[in-house]
Image (cartoon, rainbow, N blue to C red; front, side, top):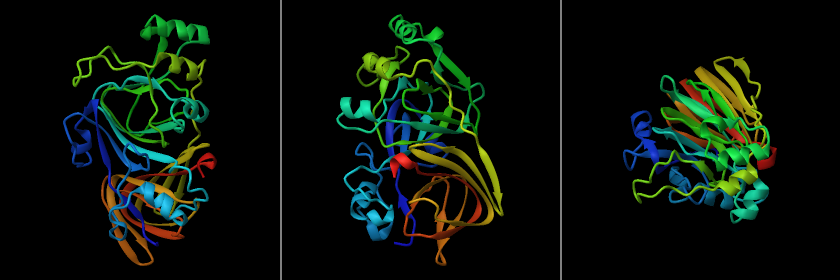
Length: 322
């Protein structure tokens, strides 16, 4: 296969979701409370259908198993390791934390842990995220949770379009209202909810379940923010910003204005167009790229050319995901 593997998004309704995925990306949302689009996913809770005509009816999970050559995949017994989403936080998400691999495997039916990252696509004026906490010891953390002293516990950070945050497993966090983000993460759907603003689920009228004991077990105390050093390289018509290089995944921002020539550096690369449009050229064949197009450049493609004026978020597997 010497073409990109194009993927269809899978939409998820959330009580905190809105309409930005339709209004910004023209996605066919199922309701006015659509919170997530899983745009590159092999996870069973929202596996990406493949758009390429040659593989019609296949999913990314099936391609991972049946065509390991496309990913330089030496172990087809493991799941596709990464997951990319759009998140529309019309309201605050629940304050939550995710486990690492070992805890998730033991307590969540063998799931992967969930280290993640956010690239902020848009943010309302005054928008914030919840990122970390103020407790200095585990005893203080547990007491603040037990007493529901959220104002003292939770750490808020203002956000703007273009900001990037690394959220390793064990980090207490939540997107705040008015934030649209692209999330790159391990392929996991394990969330321990700590605080949900005492809001009832409109479908049930009941408060959503909290997972306080698990959260206490996995939250890193004290919180230490990780701010990866970013590197910006001008490579002809390409401006490449390294947002993160970490154990599970690497994240880059590629800004193209003209023609940019790229070569394979990793087993495969995940791409999503977040602004503008253009084409990608492989062996003289052009493939159109529009806003919100997501695709994987497989291991079987050695070089390609981007043409146009567009910005893409790219990600590749880190050493723990290869």
